[in-house]
Length: 582
Image 1 (cartoon, rainbow, N blue to C red):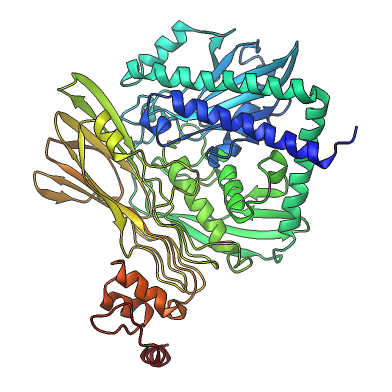
Image 2 (image 1 turned 180 degrees about the vertical axis):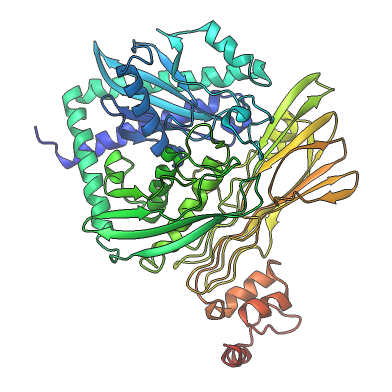
């Protein structure tokens, strides 16, 4: 059988549409704002034999592309070895073990076998960020955990649903180990309903085009994705292309961790060698293997977005040198910071390594932190406990096409901060400020985008604040002569006195009373190219919009603005100034 291009394209779009509808169903039905509003979730279709990625929705988190592939593969292996019960129609396995192809414990994965008749045709899987899975700290982001058990409940693959019915005993075990357990049923049912939606839509697709035709299309799409990625790789000089990126600290030992990367092209394949990176760390900034690999994949997706999302796109990408480093965490190393923070430093290292080789494709470093802030406590007005999770955006790096995006979502996904109105409605807090962090982007011919500033007050009750963020010690890297973006800043105002964590943007269990506030300023993106080459009219526009003061603009970009009329540029004076100070 030979597929014509139109049928192949229609089936490709149909598979993606199945995943898009699962994503939409999940978010619409979920209870927690982090899923319902922030869209911290993803859905996909995976091969029945080896768990390879077949399709993922456009609205799913890219970092989950690789991790769900590996977690599905781990589940298949455990079933074959008799370590997990054999699948039956209507079953749904739950797993959040980070060492089994996962991220951190808060990213809870469901996997459902999809049958056509008596044949296991594929797996449907999704991941949702639960706001709490137990452990020492509300929200799970323990900044000083030294073992994974301190981070929450760890689940191996077990059947939460058996032939369509939820196992009440397993659910009771889960609920007895997490906070605000009565609120989890909404997320659990939403997650299961998304897979049910996916099964119905996939059945309809197969009924329309036939099982054999769709199977052939999946194989052809995988081959084409690999070929397309290899065609892009051929544009990269052999190298090696080297870079380093730094984690502020692990939350326990106040010393930076290095991600050391060398990228080399060998024929049609690309090798990412992390030899020389820091050894395993004491605190929660270790990364499990699946997250490390997925971080490389998502970085290449940023660089070559034309390549379809498929396991084939990853085949030409090899990762070596992570053994014995903090990028290959083994039990019982803590890992709560791996998905949201370390993954973004890995992507930053890839960008910095390849920007000279692909200057028209690669950007300066983005903000590179998800801004994980958890606030857990008791609301006396509603007579119930709460766990609030806030993620936040930052600036993207400048690029050959222009300035970086301001207040963009994190590198690892499309998750967005929940609306302030929703957070104030759901939790006993009041936001006093939520605005762009003017001037935080790194200077460059194309400057970095600006980060975010917010300030939130606890209105009543009592709570504990915890942070697992990064880029507080050094800002996102500028490239090709551009300046670094501003660093992440965290300040807690208790009783009117400001407090800055010793690890800058990592700490846990900070007591918060009514009237106390938390202030966060996220990083701006790195600058791209020589700041003195920036168009003076673009500088004048930024000054006119209040993004820079006149003196600040002169210092950063060597531009002369006419007094009292910042929109007017004295080009002759600017050229003389730049010539004299170059």
